[in-house]
Image: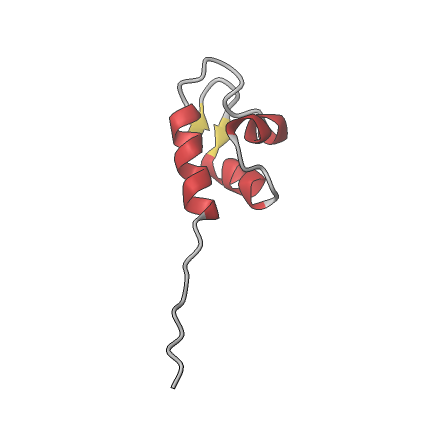
Length: 63
């Protein structure tokens, strides 16, 4: 699925950019071009950044 129609950037490309260190809309745009056109995809890019950078914390119970 396309995240950014203007630049023809697919979701997988955005996720890859985030995994490689792009952690804001501007750095995603620099990496793959998404969000550099009309800007309607910026909310989706933010959602993907949040999804990809969310960390699950494990609580260890000491015995």
